[in-house]
Image: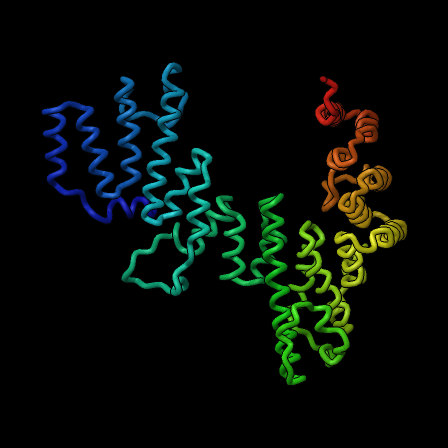
Length: 417
C-alpha cells in the first residue's frame, strides 16, 4: 500500500458527512454538493481525494462527465486551455496543502507536474532529518517519502534541489558514498554539478586539514589550528609521512583531485592543488598511477590544476602536448591524453588551439569523448566554425553541417543598424 493510500485509510470519514452530502445534493444541487465534498475532504486533510473532487467540479461546470481520463486529448478543444489553467492551479493548491503539513515527498508530484520547483526547493533547503533519523519506532507510522532517503530521492535523483540533496548525501552518508555518487551516478550538469563538486572537495579538504592539525598538535605539542593551508602545514614536516603515514583515505584523495579537473571554481581548484602537494609527499606505496596522461598522478594533476588556476599555463600546455606525442590511442581508438590537452586549452582561453588538437587527434575517435568538449562547443568558444563545417562535409554528415551553419549564423553579430 502506498503512503497516499495509507493516509486515505488511516482515519474513516465521519458518518454524518455521508448524510450531509446526500442532503446537500437533494436540497441545493450538484454544484453545492461538490463544494461540500471538497470542503470536507480539505478539512479532513485527504488531499489526493480533494484533488479529484476539484477536477470533478470543473468537469461538471463545463458539462463534461465528472469521471474521465487524465488525458487532455479527451477534453473538447474549446475547453482545453481553461482546463489546463485550472489543473495547474489545483496542483498548486494540493501541493501547497502537503507542504503546509511538511510532507515534501507527497507535495513533489503535484509541483513536478506543473514544472514549478521554487516552493519545493525552499522546503527542502529548510528540511533537516530528525536526530533519530536512523532509528525505527514500530509505534510510529513512517512516511517513506519524507525520511532521509525519500528527501534525497526527491532532491537529488528527481532533480528538485540537486545541491541540497547531494549535501544530505555527504553529511549523512559520508564521503565514500558521495564520491561514488559523483563519479558514477551523477545525473546533473552545469551549475548543479559544479556546486556539488565544490561541496565534495570542501569536505575532504576539511577532513585532511583537521587530521594534519591534530597530528601536528599531538607530535609537536603546539597549536596548529590557525593554519588553514595544507601546503603550508606540510612544508618542512617530513615526519608527517614517515612509516607510510597518511591522514585521509587515499582513494578519496585521488577521487577528489580527479573531480577538481572538471570544475571551474578557483578556490576549489586551489584546494585540490594543495591536496596534490600533500599526495606528492606520500610514501611510494601510495604513489599510484593512472592511465596516460596521469601516470605520475599527483604531479600530473598538480600541473593541470595550477594551469586551470592561471599558473604556469604555457608550461602545462607543453607538458601535456609532449604526453600526447608520446602516447598512441588505446586499443579502442580513444586518445585520452589528447582529450585532456584539448580540455586544458579550452579552459585557459585557447579554444582555437583546442580545435587544432581535436582535428589532429580526436576527429576519428569512434565512441563518445570522455571529458573533451565537443567540436561544436570548441567552435562556439573560438567563434570559428570553419573546421567543423569542413569535417562535416568530408564525412557527408549533413546534420552536423546544418547545425554548424545555423550556430554560426546565430552567433554572428547583427548587421542591422
